[in-house]
Length: 425
Image 1 (cartoon, rainbow, N blue to C red):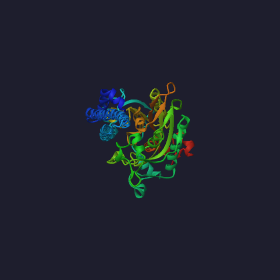
Image 2: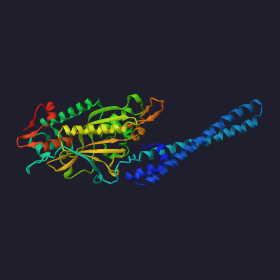
Image 3: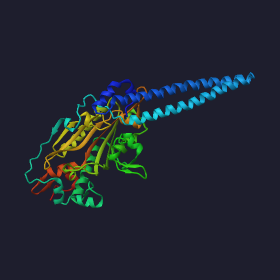
Image 4: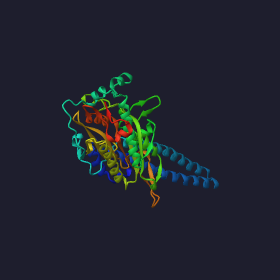
């Protein structure tokens, strides 16, 4: 959530940033926030004055009573009663303005950094780096869903029977390869200094609001209505919420956490060839990395996270590219975001496998996640960051397709210690 300080002191910058994100009615919305804040502040100012006046009048009543001036004392009492009625109305006005302003602030996305490119969609994203060679497969190369069936690795039909489309069943060496990827990602995160977390996979609405999934992505989340709980779309939600309503010491930062969880996304409206097989699922596995940092160090943290994710795809020997997202393709909460895509050689297309974002103070303001500066003990908002390291379905798809041979599917060398086998045949 944008801070009132930022909105009031750098109004034009905020409006231009929202326009870069293609947020509709940016100027009108910001003006409305400022107007509600003015109502709230004016009501508070009048309340403070009235309370001060009432205190003086109370003292005056006591003096008048001591002097036997009962009639005059009663008149002053009437003034105090009138002030109380006025204050009650002012309190209601202030609370309504504050509530309306808070509700409005929740609907306003984060503003992008200056280096975020202009644009409205994925076509406007900028490729900043590419790595590893694209394998040249023969015309008889199979897409991963056919390879999964051929080698009995993933049963999509069984998933439909048990639950529905988008809930595959991994089995045999497919399940072992999936587990190997999870272990590899967590092992690499541990080497990089991330503390492993096993969080809940259902969260309350306060957690959803804290990281910005609510109210922006409410329709994309599975909602357990009886208990008012949500299945998580990513471990970002429960892990970042560890630090909700917490004041950290500067010496503790940056905090680095990693978590493997199942993730659940409704993906309403998704259909067609681009969602076949593992390309888009309702339930999938992912390892997430999260950082809590100071404003001065968060950009360096972001770079370190990008290097960590790049290291994973390089070690898996997957062709990859890194894209800096344009304003119109960024998430609601991010200030800057880079996507990692791997090339699926049989499908001949790029598949997104990670988004690494810096949220600046946006999430921290919602979470009340703060830190105490070492130098002057002043309390400031933290910066929060997160990234997929990595999401498994499309990584699995690319591994199966890119490593197919006449003898079977080669397992990437870095995974062999975790699978116990070098080839799937």
